[in-house]
Image (cartoon, rainbow, N blue to C red; front, side, top):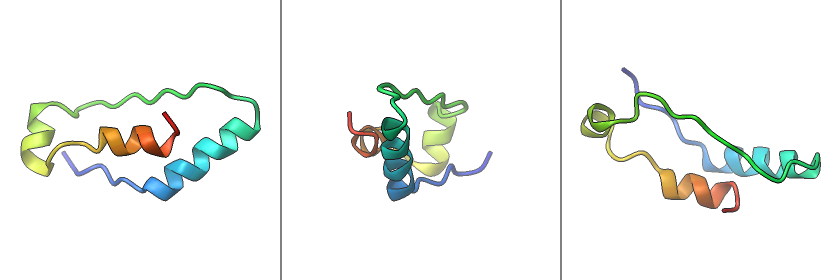
Length: 55
């Protein structure tokens, strides 16, 4: 298990790009982000991800 890097600006730019193509919804599937991940690396930045994609 490794930490999942979080690059908020990259996610924001990607979301803007997909919106410019006409996509109005985005979905992300996280796996292995349960209690073991949180204990090892801290809480995943779910709220920051939502802000980055504009939700």
